Image 1 (tube, rainbow, N blue to C red):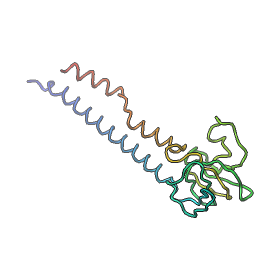
Image 2 (image 1 turned 180 degrees about the vertical axis):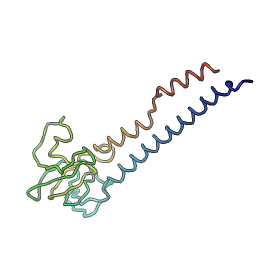
Image 3 (image 1 turned 90 degrees about the vertical axis):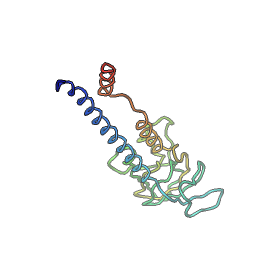
Image 4 (image 1 turned 90 degrees about the horizontal axis):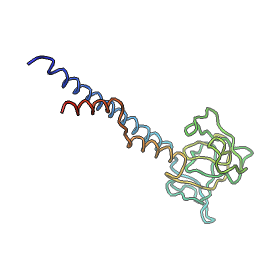
Length: 179
């Protein structure tokens, strides 16, 4: 038996091992990204619900229609529309969502419905942080129905939807020929 008889199976075996390592690495990165997104979320909020003020409601209990008071340093617990400014200005750090390097000024003036995230000056988004000012906001989306929830879903979907890479396609062809 010649040594070349072992070369092809050995190469296939090594390629399969490399492929498995790459797959595990990609899955690990996707899981880390999902965990990082979970850490962005706020834990509590000052809420006015049915005319009653609740000073510390768990953020996961917020529902669309709740009125939330945001102050400097607060993490925004849900996607919300700014309904009134308590201070003269409101600035929000939303780089975790949009990649913007500077805090963005917010206002109560409505914008067109299909405006991109950066153009929604009357909205604050879950996972962002108030860096200047106080305001009252109306909850419009919670959980997976927020902009950060959509990002979370897309990352999760991308991790689940594994398309064959060119390497995998060639391996499958090669394995088909060997069998």
